[in-house]
Length: 282
Length: 148
Image 1 (tube, rainbow over the protein chains, first blue to last red):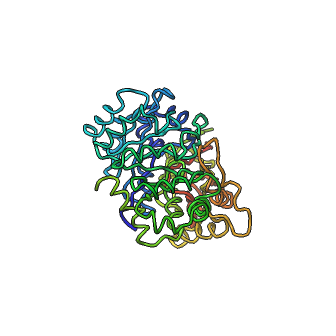
Image 2 (tube, helix red, strand yellow):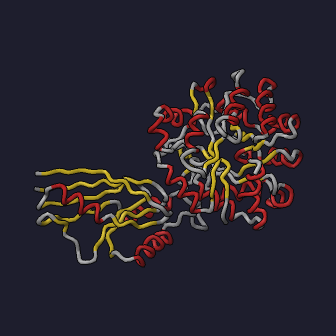
Image 3 (cartoon, rainbow over the protein chains, first blue to last red):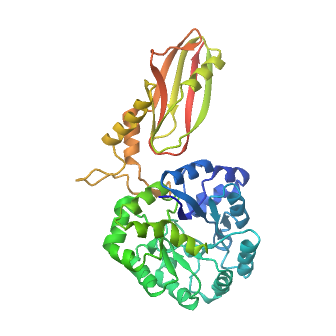
């Protein structure tokens, strides 16, 4: 398969960026909580090549208020994207700052970023808090998607309560034109996340779920046993996007696991490419 | 006595890959000024190996494939699988490369050769390979020359 898109990559291990911005190392170690060794951008692109992924969405997390740090600023994401035309940059904004919507608009219009990443667990806010609605109104006006972390969080200070799928229902209902992606299948609340996606056509799910065992066994459990595969194939095939959550999960391992699940070729094409293109307005 | 130590970086471009690093050892020995001694090479990674074998493309395919059959990445059927397939809090991610660690153990992580008259003494067909089991990744190999 050619032309695939990984909709969920955290570029925290990119050595070239850490060399330019040493403060990023503390942010990714202590806020994003990742212990792996730094790697050159080249190896990320090579790993994408291994499994037919042409482009990757790279996301920052602005946790200025909750953690006193940003895991990449929007400007740094734009700089990273200038190193390879295979990277698609998203913005992040601090939901506790009144200027968040303005920051988002500037990041899209001036930096060329193409979506918004929000992590309620790390950023410590509830997605249905009316105080953050101006951010959604701005994203809606800009016609960009929002990738929400949903479900379980690994970071020690990140609470699961912020990731419960029903906290996203008001957003889906109140902004029917806004496309939102619930990451990680919102595991362990896969059934609830699927219910939202069934009810709201603007709710998408990404595949980046791995919380025990290995990618093959975990996705088999979540996408055939927690919810039958036929539900994804028949009812949600236009609302599932491939995401790896790299570096928490290797792109190669997650891509292979998704392809082993038993989806039709048409559905795999939607998951790996077409649905992401729709979200990106392509 | 001369001690010369270097780290070299190797970027693997495939998941399984054998990369001939013999010229790197030759280069270090020639620059070290050592005429009689030993050269040691050690991979700094537990999902890779250093192996010595004949330098032919067919073996570069056979060896990783054989090791994958013995220690596969996916857990074997009929067991509890790999216990390494769990959340590793020190990494912030799950371990999904138990088979690659096992391949590293089977292949070994070091090799050394004698130096005589300023050159490494190899058998007629011996080459030194860095063997990647979990690429593509940037890897580090430690080289040490000891002698006089």
